[in-house]
Amino acid sequence: SQELEQSPQSLIVQEGKNLTINCTSSKTLYGLYWYKQKYGEGLIFLMMLQKGGEEKSHEKITAKLDEKKQQSSLHITASQPSHAGIYLCGADRGRAGANNLFFGTGTRLTVIP
Amino acid sequence: NAGVMQNPRHLVRRRGQEARLRCSPMKGHSHVYWYRQLPEEGLKFMVYLQKENIIDESGMPKERFSAEFPKEGPSILRIQQVVRGDSAAYFCASSPLQGDGYTFGSGTRLTVV
Picture 1 (cartoon, helix red, strand yellow):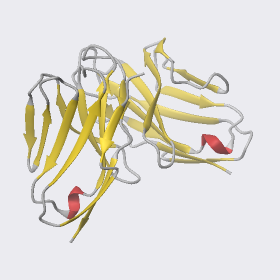
Picture 2 (cartoon, chains in turn green, cyan; picture 1 turned 135 degrees about the horizontal axis):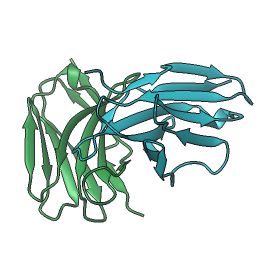
Picture 3 (cartoon, helix red, strand yellow; picture 1 turned 180 degrees about the vertical axis):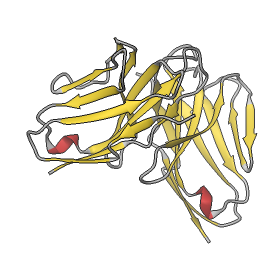
């Protein structure tokens, strides 16, 4: 069955540093989603990528999907304590749209002030 | 426009009791998905419903778990005769008929004592 591997599992960075989180699949991804989760809260949608080579940015967060649509990276520039949380990548099982998502195990980010 | 509403936020049940988790999707969303997050694990898909229909329940345990999404009212995830292993965070998400994203609720944290 298709799985999503996230790396690293956890990450501790000093405030102001850049960081990258990776999400890798053994099969072609039809839609790749990035979410952020804080303890006790739900998942906050960050970005969705569909096309090979696509890149999206929001504030200091940039997500990319490679040309083969099997790997995505999430890059945070000049990290802040507010970026701390668990980052999850999720993917559609089939065509993008109203299907269901399966998720990686998450990357726990800690930002030290 | 309220987001996905889940209640209760926290639920404590004794072993053998029943747990009922509710999810009201975003206005205009007719697709509902339930996910379970066990401690230190990623999100696992459980069931996908549209109004009055179960579309995909491949992630539901065979026994004690059921879900419904009636014509009127919220979607309900029901767990009968709960056991300690059912303790987890249960998240609901919704999507529009032909949306490009899933909106998650804040989750219900079930503790079985």
